[in-house]
Image 1 (tube, rainbow, N blue to C red):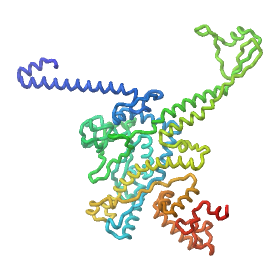
Image 2: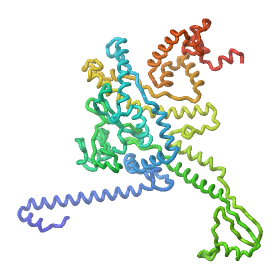
Image 3: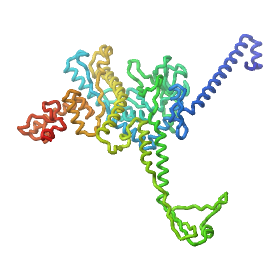
Image 4: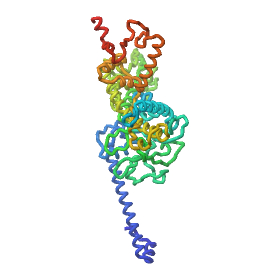
Length: 562
């Protein structure tokens, strides 16, 4: 019970009902504050108890993160608690260690490369037009898209530049955010613009008054790590701070709320992350798992460097007939606190000790035989934590045979395929925005009612990832041609994987090139580009022809009887 003051007595004397209500309200407030304090202390106690185990072992603050304990917190609470430390560790690895930089930048090249493109695929039967008209519309849409990707960035970035930034955030933060908006651009076919938002800007506002627009704020329990949830626990939007929280010049403490989806069903804020737990609303960087390994390698390498420095500097000890007492007294011998005589031996100096004529040179041992194996094993552990094969990360292929190298290459290809799915989702969302604006502005003549009833028919397209490299191009190209001739894969898939462009576009260029060569009197099918009446019309390298030996790697040897 709260203490009754003189004012309480006066109010109670003038109006007993109001006075008692006043005292009761103050008692309830004090009780609520005490209960909140008890809850806070209990939560702090749990955090201290779980701190030894940590939500994520590699995010502990200990030197070696050796604890094997797990966290009793929920996945989301553990992520909330440890995510700042995990981000610091991932950034440290990326900025300070060669392997961390190599992992991120190699993944950017492998996953994004020169960017994705699309091939519009309007189905003439589904939308009720002729096949020729559908082809014309597809050509128009592809040309419009190619113009848009050069102007799509809010700050003038090309699409591939934004995708490279998205992939870097994916590797360093485990997620990326892209904001869709509109801005007039005279050189762009539509007003669509996109902006890649730094994940660090997505955070919970400090107060309701710091949010610059209206938002469905449902209480603190419905905002987790900057993500707005509805009463069913579904993520419906996020809060982006108007500046980076670590900016030393621009220090705005205001946030803007962005819904994930607009009223027309198109995305407003695109958020992609690897969902590994139920009720997980933010990603976390995988690269931080290997922080301990690169730190250990760094310390070991520095110790070896110091030892080699010492080994490179010789110190000589000269034994003479001079009495030991006289020699040691004349060369700076002192007594320590325990009465022991000591003398510092420095590199590149001769030290006289007396009693004999002898010169001994110090010869510290070099690095142990296991040094190289230790460094490789730790680097392999780091690569494994990042999800990249050691050979792809370091370029150390050793004496691997082609088959072994191909297995490793395929493992990385599988990881790249998964990573590309996030970019494909984004491209499809961006293309849906593009088509909607083309219809609204009349550049794609479509009945608005029909478009609203079945927009997916007009959003239909095929996303084409960037060109893929290969280990042995000649051998793999021959294998591809064998598969094409056997009907295992279509030739268009091979073309798109090799070029990163729509197959129809490549076929038109090849057709035009062959026509130009034929007009010039050259045979476009022959490697020597010469016309020979005995070989004219044959195409030993053309896929799908009747010459089965065209793609057989051993056909020449078999013909020679070898």
